Length: 319
Figure: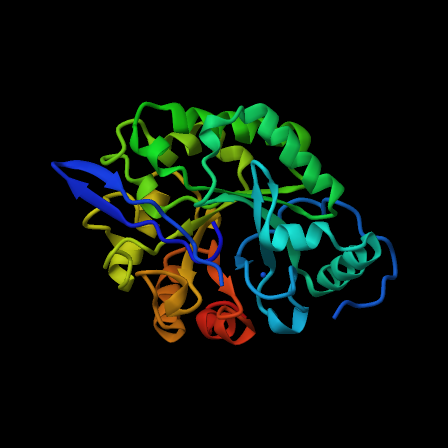
């Protein structure tokens, strides 16, 4: 995917059919005091405040521009190799990477790469060899882990179990190379994929059951689904169209509160639907925090989602 995520879901003849999602393109270093190394001690404790970057000339924005976030995800690492900001990072000199990583470490920010996106269809590839190649990229390029932004909609819509099994195999294979406690491993599923009533093959309920313990958290895309997830009730309590996919429903389904990260567009142009003004989203965050949720917030993407954006969204919930 090259820009904002567009993943509209449509129902026809009682069968869920997704439209092709796409993200249309358009995430100053401190002096190095000690060499930064690949991996950074694994996942930090929740809450997770994640921002994707796929625009502009900075693969990893200066810390002053993203203060308040604690994870930056560079897009994208494709089955064919690095693209966009991942490619920009790849081409930086090692000394420059180390300098940026030092600044991020000092600011308490993790730097990861995001894999696939909407333009990549990885299910046709071999899960284990793809995982090995991507794990090597993570290790070679001095980042703290990888985000699995799988959006192979046709594969998931087939409901034959192949998409789920590919994701399970891919996650297991990644963890053999990127062990827990040293590297971050997240997934970025579309929210409706947690609706078991729509996906008889399980979708992400199946993935979580099988390998959820190996996934540090979920950057869940609560957008590009029409009017769904655009009110606090629809986002948090009950999804009328995709039962089981609102925040509290996902938690009830067995995903721990610290793994459910609410994903929203940084600006109206960053998605087709699902945008909420930061002040409105902050009200939902307050409500969720009051009911024992502490997963955090994700945004697609910088620079619309910047230090001021996350400050407003956090409000008084997270200081």
